[in-house]
Image (tube, rainbow, N blue to C red; front, side, top):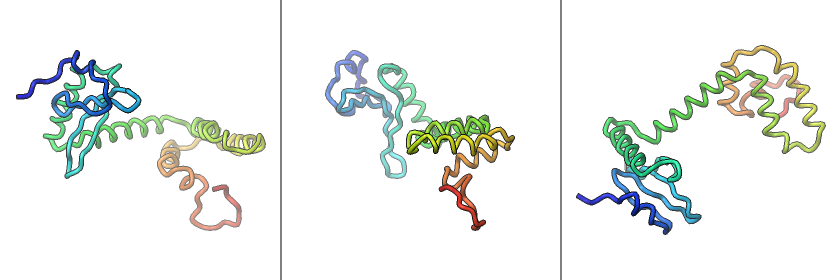
Amino acid sequence: MKRLMSAREVDALIEPGRYAVGHGAYLQISQWKTRSWIFRYVRNGRARHVGMGGCDYVKLSEARERAIEYRRMLARGVDPLDNKRGVRLEEQRAQARSKTFRECALEYIAAHENTWRGDGSHKQWTQSLQGTADFALNNAVILQFLEQGFHGGLYHHDRWDGKYHAP
């Protein structure tokens, strides 16, 4: 059986590349010399990589423990990357369910106001949403809006009603 690298040996590595540290865990050193842990595995003929954190925050022993847990997940038929993404998506959905329409509208305005040409756009957006934002809406509507994206959400109409609606 191959001997696993010690923490001192891992700390001494400085050249960019991937270095196996055991159980499918790798130390990845980028061209900018940033160091992070990844778990590499093959699923359905495709190589996959799951990030396990930076070396500043995750110790070698923790990276190996996570790699062992990911190996156990693979043995149970669970894809670690899909599982990680699914957990993150559920967290985002739970957070979206707890937001009010007003919070969503203000976040949208803050995120997009730097792309507007002048103060008139900001005033128009805030005024048009001000009455709506205070209106009580079901959070399920907000969640649907966030999942569909802006262009498929509020301003999308299945039929032409004779009025112009912003894209």
